[in-house]
Image (cartoon, rainbow, N blue to C red; front, side):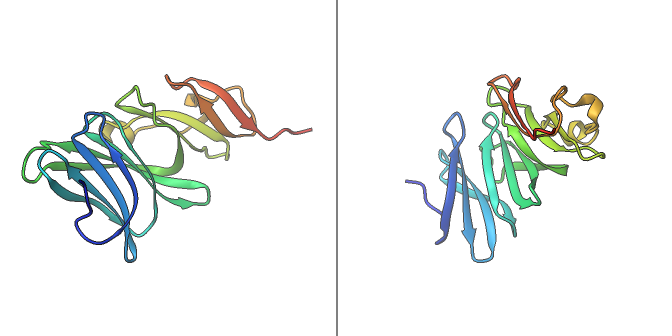
Length: 177
């Protein structure tokens, strides 16, 4: 059995594709926590303790975890946690951040290094971008301008739906006129 290291209110648990790791999300007094449980070793490691709700957690392969935090005027903060040397007593953990608030359109489960992410451009239009979340150096230079958006040809859109490879299949838009 897998349990919390202390008495807590468990909100969500996600197991890695290979079944070796579990991300346990729970509320603990005045904070939200994410613990990593190594099933094989029987150990637990605190990955995050934040003062905003952890809205979603998804595995991208067996060593990358995506955390969606809080909700700020329809947008969220997304962090990626890369886990290395997982069988060590103290695994190496690297946390990456998408600095522009937005929301995940699709986790792209078949692609370990990318997500589809939506945010607002400077003029306020919705832009959907494919972001490489493998390294901070690939996240930081992401151009959130309209020229590189994937949702071209749609005006006044506010939501999008994709298929498994991340291709746009339907968009929700406000009808004008």
